[in-house]
Length: 225
Image 1 (cartoon, rainbow, N blue to C red):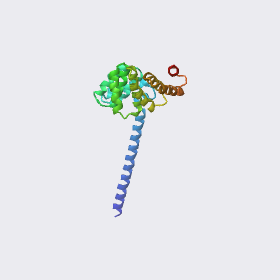
Image 2: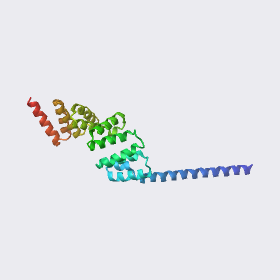
Image 3: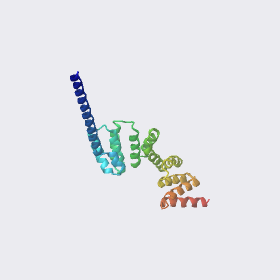
Image 4: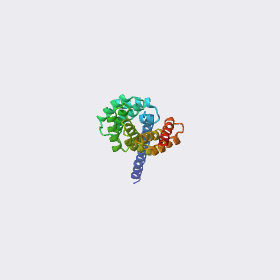
């Protein structure tokens, strides 16, 4: 009976030791994984910090390792757009769409690229598709702004008013966007609303020359009536 108790205690002790070894091994493995994750290059983090060249290099490495990594393509394209390398962004966006044609981020990227390249028709088509399908609130305001600019380019000023109103509603501290909204309203003949938008732009940025000239121009037009 004493032997059985001793044997039982020995097995219990070994089981306890094995559990402790297993826990220690798991803790060590998780620590190593954490250190590896911290040291692993992160293209998105570099992009957010404005290190666009480094984000591009990391993105290219990630794509070379896995050509179906759509997230890598997306960050790469955003970085290339930020560097005004629009032809390259277009090429990689189309490569990514061969993997996932319906990813809304890629649709938005194509809209931005075509806008920069002066292709208003394709830019508008992709950007409108993007705002109708995406839940990416972090970039949708930019899409509305670009849509507004396309409508200004094509002389559809009331359409531009609608798009730019959405843009400033989402990012009300952007003096450029208020100025472009004011310009659209000015050209649509909505002069009082144009004055309001120019004044908003100048309240945000008193030294903004375009807004000052626009406000003076619209006030002179109203005074001459």
